[in-house]
Image (cartoon, rainbow, N blue to C red; front, side):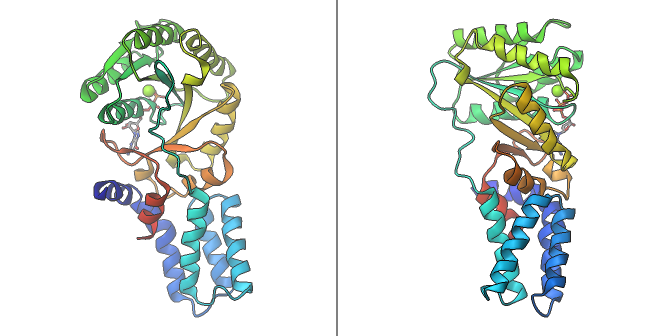
Length: 306
Ligand SMILES: Nc1nc2c(ncn2[C@@H]2O[C@H](COP(=O)(O)OP(=O)(O)OP(=O)(O)O)[C@@H](O)[C@H]2O)c(=O)[nH]1
Ligand SMILES: [Mg+2]
């Protein structure tokens, strides 16, 4: 548990400095709670990619408490900020819970180019294997020859089987083979890597639909979970990707927000929690195999405020 908190703290340190660090500074310099202080905090939140909607909600709630005399000192503003953020990101969902479906659960990993899909597949495989799940991965990125090799290295590192495509083969056909193999081998979780695709390219989005449809020939549709990988450094852009991918595959069940260690704008996690109805399953806090962590809202808030 200590290590868990430690990796959240390390991975989110730039965001902490940029958001909570700056608010703490502003609060420290303020003699009283006034419009100037609240405007300053609003600016810090927006600039930290917390998003307009979550920022407005937070500031409005603080203002109400100030008006009702529930907040009197600048220090209390910081305490209130913490509880407002907690309320927004709060979840008691266990992203590692695969449910009790018969046969393999399939995670279809998708996203725009370079968001961290392939490395996340490798990290997830290690995570679920450690949880005692029989895990298998499949390389359905048939566009880039190097993608399959990249995944093969991760498979070896994580000690899981890999179903690989021959170059140029149809990704839906590979997905079908992988699902069939997973079922035959009594696999608990099959994680499918797909090629990066711009959400504006309709034919590539159709391909995802086709992969999903083919999978339903092997497992019930409830066993197929569409997971969208978002690059945490791309800020508000990430939010629009959720909408388009959701339309393409009819629903996205969960998000993986990567590269939070590389950004001061991890406030995007708060923006996503506020504006999107899709939950965050895992967050990427580094490049090592253990750096993809199940999103734990309490630990997230602690890491920012401790
Ligand atoms: N620092 C950091 N780097 C990450 C994280 N997740 C992924 N990366 C890096 O991001 C780069 C791209 O990762 P990939 O997994 O290849 O991305 P992809 O989405 O599969 O890319 P395409 O298949 O080309 O669309 C790699 O250098 C990864 O190491 C993270 O959480 N933190
Ligand atoms: Mg890839």
